Every structure is written in C-alpha cells, then in structure tokens.
Length: 320
Ligand code: PBG
Image (cartoon, rainbow, N blue to C red; front, side, top):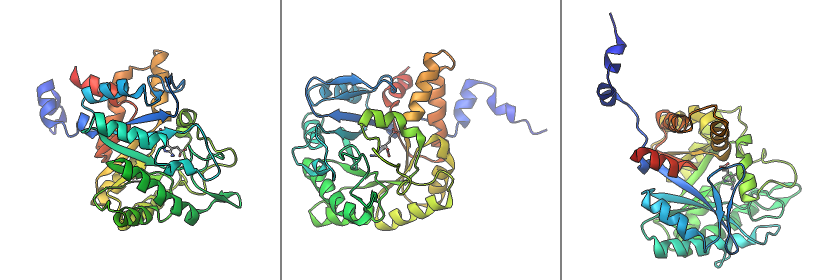
C-alpha cells in the first residue's frame, strides 16, 4: 500500500522532507515615518506597529537590526500635503531625511522606499488628478522626480506602488540617466484594489477623499490580467515583481513564479495582519501558529520575499 504517513512519523523525518521554510532572510519590514518630533504612536488597527518621527526611529532600527531583519520598506507621512504631492521630491522631505539617517547609522540595513503619492496628496489619490481621475502620463513625470530624490538620498532600492502604466520604464530611464544604473526597482506589479488595505490607510493617512482606486488598481476578479501586468513590468526592466495583497492572491504568486525569471515578492498587507492580531486578542486563534502558517503559505505559493508587519514577531519566533 502507498503509505504517505511513513514520512510523517517523527519530527526529524518531517524535518528531512520539509519542502518550504520561513527564514529571516525572506523578510522586509515596513516602517511608517512621520514628520515631526517625539512621535511614537501605535496604529489602533495594527497592534505593535507605530508611526515614528526621525528622533524616535533609532530605537526601532536598533531592534530591527538586532533581529537581523535584512531590509525595511519606508512610507512617509508629511506634515503638509498638496494637490500633486510635490513634497515627495523634496530633498529635505521626511523620507529623504530618514534614508540619510538610516544609511549613516545602520549602513548595512537595506533601505527600500515606497514610491507613490497617496500619502502626499490632499485628495489621497496616487497621482495628479485631471477630470476626476488620475492622469497617468502627468503622474509619470513626477514619479521620475521622486525616485531621483530617493536615489540621491541614498536609497538602496525603489518600489513604485501606484499602478501607473509605464511606471517601470519611466523610473528605469530616470535612474539610468542620472547616474543610478545599478539601483534596482521592485515593482508592485500586480496590485489589486483591495479592502485589505483599510488599516494601512489609517496608518498612512491616505484614504482617497473621493472615489476609489479602481481605475488604476486591479479588479480582484482577474487573474490573466495579472500576467499582463507582470509581463509589462518584466519587459520594462523591473528587478523584482510583487503581488499585493498576499493571502487572497496566492494563485497569482504561483503564476508569477512559474512564468517569470525574476524574484517574486508578496505584500502581506495591513488587513491580513489586523485580522490575525484581532482574532488572537480575542483568544480565538493561536497567534504565532497562524502567523507562521499563513506566511509559510506564501512561500509555498512561490514567494521569494515577503513584506510583512510580522517581521519582528517572526524573527523572534524563529529564534525560539
Ligand atoms: C500605496 C500603498 C498602499 C499600501 C502600500 N502602498 C495602499 C493603497 O493602495 O491604498 C498598502 C499596504 C498595506 O495595506 O499594508 N502607496
């Protein structure tokens, strides 16, 4: 008889046949950095995750580096917004200062910047508004300014998340033409218009003041279109392709893994994090086990890299 249970008998044989593992090397930790002083405010819908100002940030960075997390993904929360998000390319902006601070005091920590406008525009959309919609090509011009400013400040990688058509080609060209041909781009290639971003929008102050993001982010019903999105970004030279959110889109992660010769990242988003934390707080699930199992499912689906608010928790769990 075929007895698959033979290889499950003890922990050591299970270890030998284990196909996927979570490792600290897989993880990127997002950080919210707010303009101001003395800020260290926990985000109510994301227990354990705080907004930091530049002066309170080092304590968090000490922890992150001690836990050996290889990379952080930076989100900025500026004190002033405008119609076009011009603060995103201010060389003295909060993100630019944060990059310089990190690279000075934690030179080995790999710094990735989220490249978008929604936290910086008064209307909360991911670009310039014309006729009640985001103007794709006008937004590309400003995207180039933003990445160059991040590159000048010392970012190790840029990660455009706005789902504008042609964003990767524009960014690649801008970086190549300004002396940054070796700076890699991680594309939020397949990003869905998802309700799982709810807590993030509270955290980053980026809820659109009118409408929604369905004219630029993808329809959750679509799978083939995800391949199309990834295909264009691959052609345009994205170094890493990302799927976002992660848990409800494991099929898309596998599609990218099977069809592209690029590292695949996924973003375990705020709503996914909040659900686990909330159920655990109620005592309805075992937080650590559910965390590890759901992140492992992303690895099994094909993710090489996981961006997750759980990164510190995982690092601690893996050390036990
Ligand atoms: C856009 C951006 C979003 C997230 C990361 N970058 C939100 C959005 O599209 O509204 C969501 C991350 C999360 O939910 O954890 N700059």
